Every structure is written in structure tokens, then in C-alpha cells.
Image (cartoon, rainbow, N blue to C red):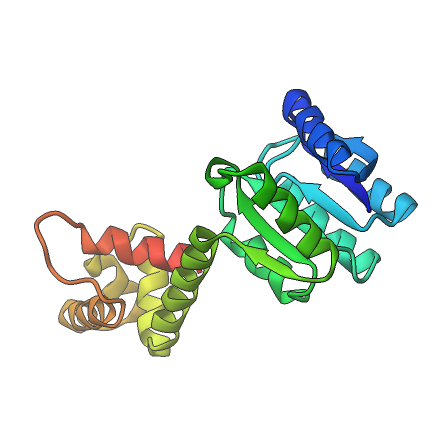
Length: 214
């Protein structure tokens, strides 16, 4: 089995390479950024690539976006994302590109080397391996999206203006409606998004965060 490793941490990259080599796999490329990952996958056509999410130059989601692009350029490319983070948007896109040959594992939750190697082999064989925490966060994202879909066009408009930091009075002026009408829309938004009134939570902020995460 031939593997590519894309990880900007030299120590971690070499450690993963050692694990794979000791398990009888061939590491054909070890790279430290997304562009180098694309080049390696196109050149070597590995059986599996192990990819970190956050890589140079900005350490945001470069690795995961490169993995998605690699599957576009080389259909059937098999990817194991190994990260400390769940990047919900691009994780969803990666899985949507075809669940066969996809894995998403969290570094801090990999407790057994043999389990990790088994996951790599499973993905290389066309299987799917997703950490339960990854699944939970992606399901939560989908539920947020379902709740937003229940909003009317006017409620979405009000929520968008809330996200701009506008008060109810400013929203009313912008939409040429009464402030009372805006208050009714805001109350309806809170209800549809499942945001009950509590002293601990600022519902307006939570509603805007739900909107921005979609």
C-alpha cells in the first residue's frame, strides 16, 4: 500500500511515516502544505493520503480544501483527514464528494495505533471511517440548517440585518415596518431556532451565530 502524508509538523509527519512503514506500507511522499499534497497525489496516485486540516500559509483549512480538490482532479483519491479540529463546512463537502474512501479522525481521540492503522487500511480499501465526534458535529450542523430552512423569507431578512448588528428599530426603518412587527419576527426566529429565554444565554447573539455558521 502506497501512502502520502500531508502534515506541516515535521515531528508528527515523520512519526506517522514511521508507523506506516513499520506496518508494511510505503510512504511515497511527505509534504507540508496543500499545494504539495495536490502535486504528490497527481504524481504518485497513492492508495491513501493522510491529511491535516490546518496547513500553511494561513493554517485555517488549506489541507482539507486541497484534499477536496485532489478528489476532483484524481477521482477516487482516498483521504484520511487527521486533525485536532472538525472543520464542518469542508468536512461536509469532502464527504459529499463521495463517502467511499474517506476518513476523518481527531488526533486527540486516536487512542490506539492499531486502530489508526486499521482505519487507514479501511479507507484505502474504499471504506469510510468517521470519528463519532465528527459525526455529532456534522449532524448538529445539519440540524441548524434544517431550522434555518423553516424561517420565512422575511424572517431570514430580519436575521440577516441582526447579523449586521442592527437594532430592532433600525431593522424596522430599513424594512419600512413597525418596530412591533420586527419584534414579532424576532420572537418567531427565536422559537424556530430553538432558543428559549434564559438568563444564561443571549438569544440574539445565538441566533446570529446560527445564521453565520450555515
